[in-house]
Image 1 (tube, rainbow, N blue to C red):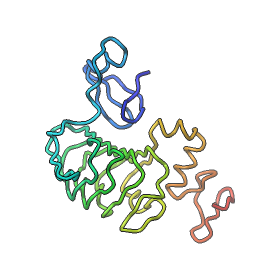
Image 2: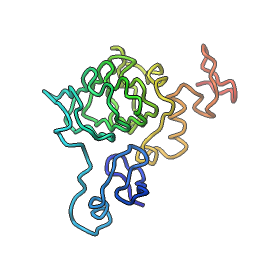
Image 3: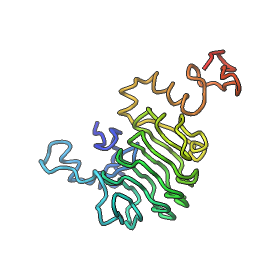
Length: 215
């Protein structure tokens, strides 16, 4: 099985056999990159990030996405995604590197085709609940998200942000490092469910209504 260089996800071959696509973060690998991964050639993959010409970046701030690709890997070194940087674009999948510490107001607003957002780091500040307006799936590469800051307050994962997504997932790399059982418990914890069974917790006491565990 071939895996993605970005997140470790499994690569799935396109029906036209022109490229393979990561099932987790959506990054595409053309034929030459696949040959390199299988050892057929010594040339290195070129899909770690979109070309710098696809972005307007000043002083570490990604001000605007001007590329045509729908699968976007933001370059390492970007520290902030500016206000409305991707607003209204047709992007489908985006990978946000560990260097990004701040995501501005409506950075991904009106991105109605946005399916998956993969966050590689853990220290992030979301300036507004609408930072990911329209996104469907959130993928985390680091479950140590107590350091994520929201509206200027350090806390556990912002549940109000999670309401913007229909699905929370981990990268295969994180799942493997935690183990399947622990990974599932962490997903339950981050979505406000009982860490033992995934049941609904009592609002005031945190006691699970299904298994009785005190969370």
